[in-house]
Amino acid sequence: MRSLRPRLAVLASGVLLVTGCAAMGTGDGSGPAPSSSPSSGPAATSDEPTATESPQDPDTPTSWGPTIGEVEEAQRLVSTWSPDQLAGQVIVGRFHGTDPEEPAAMVRDLHLAGVSITADNVTDRDQVLAMTSAVAEAAAEDGRDFPPVIGVDQEGGYVSHLRGIATDFPHFESAGLAIQADLRSGRKVTRVAARATGYELRDLGFTWVFAPVADVTIGAADPTIGARSPSEDPQVAALATAYAVKGYDSAGIVSTVKHFPGHGTATTDSHDVLPVVGSSLDEIRRHDLPPFELAIAKHAPAVMMSHLDLTSIAPDVPASMAPEVYDLLRDDLGFEGVAITDSLGMGAVGGRQFPALQALQAGADLLLMPVDTATTHRIVVDALRSGELSRARIEEAAARVVALQMWQARIAAKRPVPVDVVERAQAASADLLSAAY
Image 1: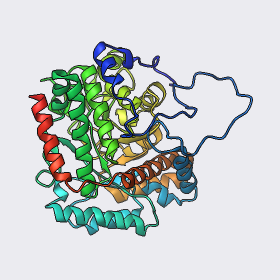
Image 2 (image 1 turned 90 degrees about the vertical axis):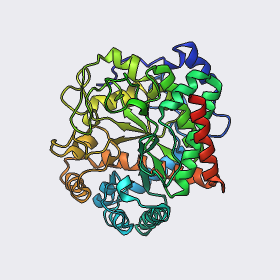
Image 3 (image 1 turned 60 degrees about the vertical axis):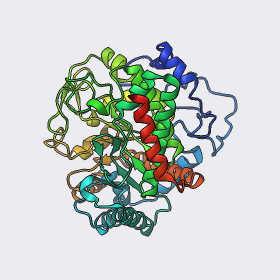
Image 4 (image 1 turned 45 degrees about the horizontal axis):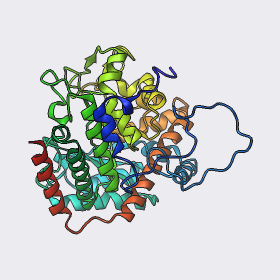
């Protein structure tokens, strides 16, 4: 499936969204600038060859953050790697307990892209710092001069795995309410809250945040997302998501727009079962896709794929393992960055055989939290050696991840964490709550 639909026109859909986008821009230096290079996505409109092909400037940013030079450097690097190294670089592992050496050993021995840290892995600030430092050191000991993925679910509200360690922020619903209350100030407090969160997470040693939630909720019938969603209005949700991406970008942390193509209409919980979503493709376009499209237009670096059975696109297959859904993301929305699965330990995919291979073959770049990290690594290595997984597919995935981590290191180096980061985060949380209510 090459293209499911014409390019969405979200940027022109409604006075609210047009007004909001006009003020966003990229001239404040808070995020990657638009790419001026030719694109393989929908923006490429001419098939006619040019008389002369000039080399691309390696410092030109891509549409998702890294420069062309960083992408090319990452591609050259991974082309030299062994199957064991390649397999590790497409896995973000899970671990149990609070001993910093356990995730460090996994990253070092299995060459993992990194790890996801949950509430069960943390005790206090000092222990978190010891853990993130140990993981970073393990990646360096493995010969990598770019940072590992050290990620956490820190959305605000009840999905905040660093509760009591990092600043408590309100549910992301607050961003949508603030934007509805006052467009100008709502945009600002949303961006500032994301930036403050990003800086505080970086201060704790994190490089990724699994946020913002771009799902457009349907309200009480939605048991999974609810107040994690910015709004029931697709256009309000789009603005909140895009401004959060800008805030995270400006703090030098990798954000993850989730859960593509939208979990807000599911009436069962994918943590337990595979939800069946019967929305037509047109309904998905109108209700679910606007936040993702605007976030991508504003240089979202990563998108998380949902575990949903989308009957109008890929029936009976989780979206995270359906090539048609990756086509929707890549070909129709023009996304060129890192596609990461939702946790592979969730009930929605728990009964499937070799879910990691299915996701990689479908188009995933990163596998998030497989049930057994070491076993998943071995399965991917074996599939690479047997030819069941093509080396070209895994090199493509690994290079995207490496390039994004190079971007993260470069931006973080330019934007040191403020000395009063905690005070700024507390003020940003209070301002967001006040603007919403």
